[in-house]
Length: 105
Length: 105
Image (cartoon, rainbow over all chains, first blue to last red; front, side):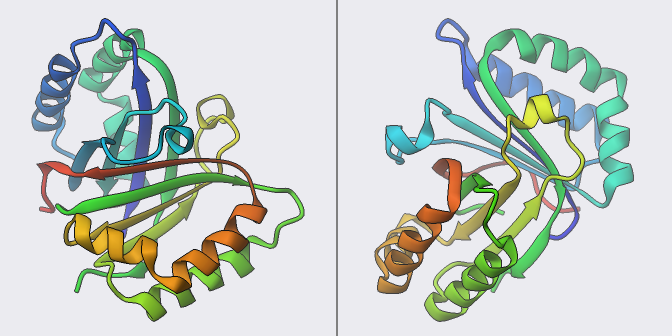
């Protein structure tokens, strides 16, 4: 769980087929392959007030910042990002080295 | 990396000693103990425009939704949340079962 994290939370536009975006993201991961861990999720539980309209979170873990930099600069990512950005209503990105407070038990 | 996720992103108020909050959070984790994985990070890399003022991310992984529910309802969490909420300028919470697109290699 250590490593460099790339966290994206978004609200998609209403007419977007989210399933297509997720397929594109899965394809991207298989094409680039420099991330170690990648998962996403859709909030179907939280309180609307606390979600503030955001619905999906995506988190990638890289070995280190170099891995992240290689991913971001990869032509497939650049191409995907252009498509992705047209599908979102709002977004927050956070990139950070993680501090592990508790590892898996 | 599977499991139920509790994701919190925040911007702390300017006069807050973040180190104290992090210590309190570490204590909380050791007291409750029902989360499997917990890490946090401070974005010192991203573009301000994409961060939208948010600075810290916290992510907890629970075995399942029951684990998360037990955590949220624990008296120590209720007490900590009251303190935490006074320290934040803005916050987004997302709670979701995770979909693993790529496991650790």
